[in-house]
Amino acid sequence: MYDEMPPELVLDEPPWSDEELDIATGPGASAAEVERFAQIELVGTEQAQWAMATLARLTRLRDELKAQADAWHARIDAWYTSADHPLAGRAAFIDDRLQRYGLAVRERSHVATVSLPSGAVQTRKRGEHVVSDDDDVVVAFLHGLLDSGEITRLEFDDAVKTTESLRISELRKLVRIVTVGENQLVLFGDDQVVPGVHVEAEAVTATVKPETQGMIQ
Picture 1 (cartoon, rainbow, N blue to C red):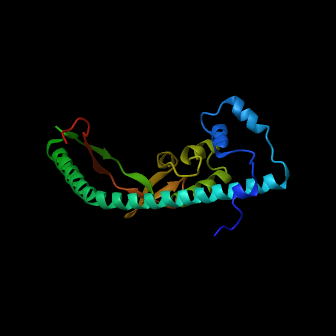
Picture 2 (cartoon, rainbow, N blue to C red):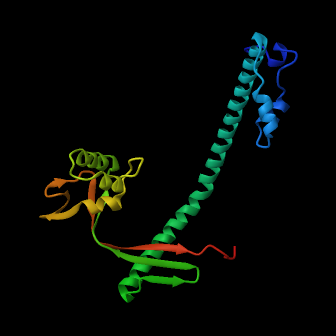
Picture 3 (cartoon, rainbow, N blue to C red):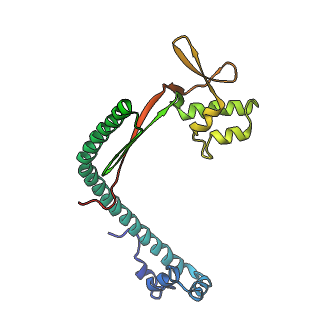
């Protein structure tokens, strides 16, 4: 059942055929074709009704195409999730054991990088550092400092991306860590506690880098 009259019944001779529109609007359209079609206007109610019916048909077709694509994407996503789940679990377990192995070697032999035929485990020591718990809270705090003139626009722009997401490395330059009893506070200036952050203790971390190029399958 049609909701409106099909375009071909509205007008015997439409101003443009599908083939002509494809030629004029396609990636290979010549300047002459584009110019020629740019000069054509709808004339009269019948042509306008044909154009509206044609647009409605194209919109339905595009909606159906999008729905089909979404359905296929959902099936592909479900297949990928199912197929990847066991692989991801195995990879995460082995990655963790390689990290622990690399850290044990570093502790025992003071070797920072363990090189293996199929990759390497790199370890590094990091001092205590500030970590964000809630970027929005920290950005709002920095806005307050900017508004009050306690930090410059340059310092704010360094610490906050254009989309106003936090650059934690730049924030660390603006604050300091203070130990009060058993607690560690992140302060700006003399006494302003920075919200939405905490201090991570000094630690040695490991990064596993498998070599996947040129391996035998």
